[in-house]
Image 1 (cartoon, rainbow, N blue to C red):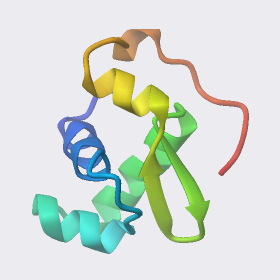
Image 2: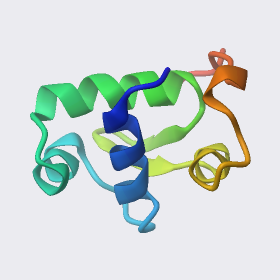
Image 3: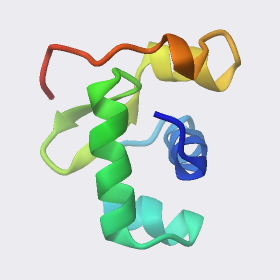
Image 4: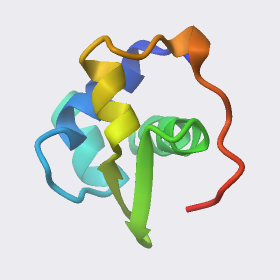
Length: 82
């Protein structure tokens, strides 16, 4: 789990907004499919959550990752879903 797009996705979600892949993609100049793929990956590692179908938010773990308090190499796949 180390993709340059991941940081951009997390930064956009760190604004506190619930956003869908299309809005995120538009704001970081990436294709919606790319963002959707990265959101699924970030969710697997517990960095984002999907509180409502089609909308994502950053988790506390995601905030720690952005702040440099959590190394990507230390992340483990989450066993819980959405």
